[in-house]
Length: 174
Image (tube, rainbow, N blue to C red; front, side, top):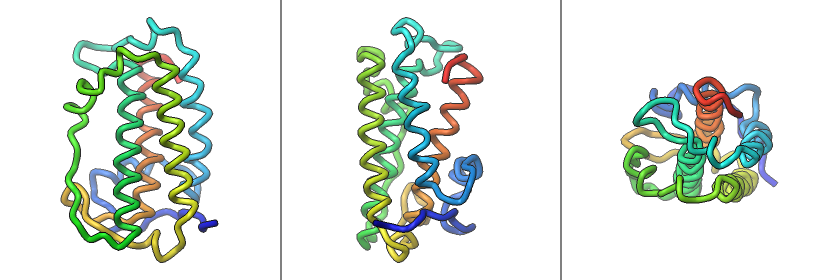
């Protein structure tokens, strides 16, 4: 079993991801990642018509947000795995504004999207729980920024917190 995934220090992530890390409470990203599962799972109870709601033209639906969360979680986990395994290959960013429409998330049942996200989150937790201090401190380059493995756990948690806040504030759910 790995150790707690403690808060990253300045210089372990880019400025753009610092806003996600700052949202995360406490001292261990794993506890937050685990706690978020219940909140996201609860979204599955939304009626399908409500899951298609967009608070403004051009904004994502609830289903698209959940699909985006699963996509981003996969990317963060992949980056963490590569860097933890001493892979120095610089990794590109991803364009969520292109990925979301390509995902056709509105055509899928919300419960399926939530279940997919939960499966991906379980894999993220398994990965980070299996890492030790030296692996958590390793760094790589993703989206032109140097980032540590442990920062990726905090970014995953903060990214989910960001979207859950948007769901509460703009969609009246979560």
